[in-house]
Image (cartoon, rainbow, N blue to C red; front, top):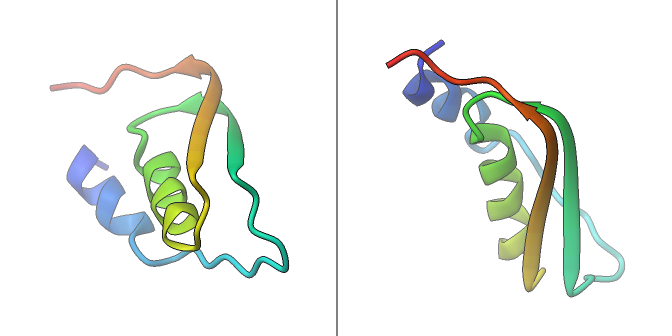
Length: 65
C-alpha cells in the first residue's frame, strides 16, 4: 500500500472509551512504516480529551517514493 492507502485503511477504525482521561499518553510501536496508524490513534485520543500524545518506535521503514 502507498501512504494514502495506508491513511484511508486506518481512518475511523479506532474508538476510545475512557473512564478517566489522562493528560499524557505514550504510544509504543515496534516498527513504523508510514505513521498512519500512530497518527490516527493520536487523533482519536486527542479528540477524547488527551492533552499530549507521544510515540516511541524501535524502527522505521523507509517508504518508496
